[in-house]
Image (cartoon, rainbow, N blue to C red):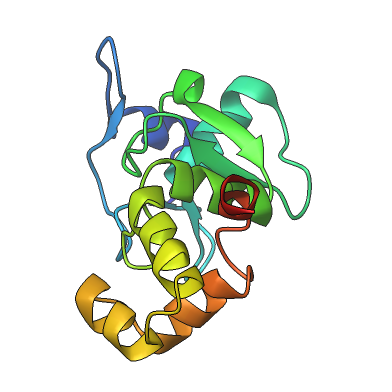
Length: 150
């Protein structure tokens, strides 16, 4: 029995609206839609497939990011290309990453460290690990804050 085309199966699983187009079928563990390709044990991320339908092939090692910050959205107008670095910057600008910590908390950690406060106390008060405090203080993460602080 011949399987229906992937594009046809894709569109029947999309709930369009004026904003986000919601994927109504299977999702992975972090909320991104997935669609089976027809090949044994192969699937695609629905938002990447949607981007390709609208814009053509995605270059290798390129991410498809969400302007709307909704992993279940497949509206190509809400999607844009980036790399790992731009993905991390996008997450941080939206208050995600490092356990959901936003720039305000990262800035507080940086200031408290610079003021000579104990790393263990900062970590406990802010609900993060010692490694997160050290990475922020040594500018391995949240490098954008160092320009504000220095």
